Every structure is written in C-alpha cells, then in structure tokens.
Length: 185
Figure (cartoon, one colour):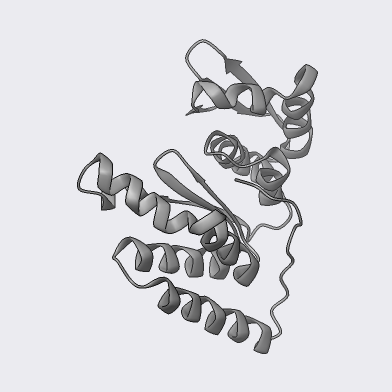
C-alpha cells in the first residue's frame, strides 16, 4: 500500500461525480483507493495486476497536480508512459520571481504551454508551483528541457525553435505521437 497526498481542492476531481472517477481509476489500474477528504491523503492498495497497480500512485499524483482524469489515465496506455514534475519554486528566488517564472512557462494566453503540448504530443499542466508532464520518456524529456530553458531565462523564441527542432526530429524518426484536443489549464 502506498500513500499519496494531494491538495484539498483536487479531491473532488479525484473522486468525480458520484465517485465515478475514483471507480474508473480503481477498475483500470486494478487498485483500491481510500481517500481521506479531510487531509487529502489517498491510500492506494493494489488488488490486481501489480504492474498496473504501480502506475496508480502516479495517476493520483497527476490528478492532484492539476491534470484532468482522462489525461492521468493515459499513464496506463503503455508501460512507457510516465509522469514528471518540474518544481518551479526551486528555480525562483522569491514569490514575485516565482510568479514571473510561472508566467514565462504559461506564456501569453497560455500559448507557451500549448506549444509544449502540440510540438511534443505530451500533456502539460501548470498548477501551483509545478509544471507536470505526462508522455513518453522522450516527450517528457523535451518538455523538461524546454521548461528549464525558460526558467533559466532563455528567450521564448529560442525555446520555440528548440521545440520545433525536436518535433521535426520525432517526425523524421517516424515516432508516432497524438494530440488530444481540448484545452487543459
């Protein structure tokens, strides 16, 4: 059994309407979730396939970090799918710097975050003081590198060029990726 703590305001999303999301996660990942809505603690107990059960804590964490349940459940699509977090707070000197860096990652009207998604095929969410990514190891690595470039102060144009180069590289290698429509924030 593993314990995962998620923010109070994400518990409702994890449970879903009438417990629907929680039941779907339990069925898909073959686990049992015990959610303490008082403190945001979630106990994850594997009841079926242990390999699928290993992904369940990451699914819960991803929902806790702002991903919609459908995106978090992508972690079960393939054993290569992974969840990664970039701590924006660690790169910031103070609260104002944190806001500025978060703004750089989001971009004007959310454009930078959207481009990260479009050009890599990964799901990207900025929530609180983290940037979360769900995708293949290569997709996650590209998003992490782009985010670190922005956090280090690289111009947006440079980062966009990097993302486009990597996109073309993946396309050239014949790597398949898919983009899920729908705006996540």
